[in-house]
Amino acid sequence: MSKKFTRIGLVGAIVFLALSLTLLAIQTGLSEEVGAVIFSKKFVENLTIALVIVIVAIPEGLPMTVAISLAYSVILMFEKDEVLIRDLESPEKMGQVTEFCTGKTGTMTSEDMTMLKLYA
Image: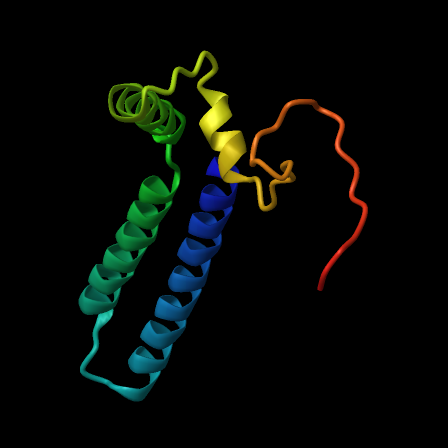
């Protein structure tokens, strides 16, 4: 997830910089009032904004934030629902589950279950 955010941020910064420089070049070509001083000032501003986008897009603290939030949720699950979890990755894996197969009482007594019929 961190790599995706980084890529999205880099692409966004490049697109922003390209568009802003294009608009600045068009504005400079159409208006004679925009001099070299104003052009260089706006160029530096656009470059600074693109750099800020790149810096913000790289989430260095994301893994630590996810670990802290998982630990906090594990503590809440223990205090509220009396559920004890040994592995912090378990709640994350359970969030990826889309379907449960249980017996007629709702309990899961063995790891092997077979589906006999499917009702669609």
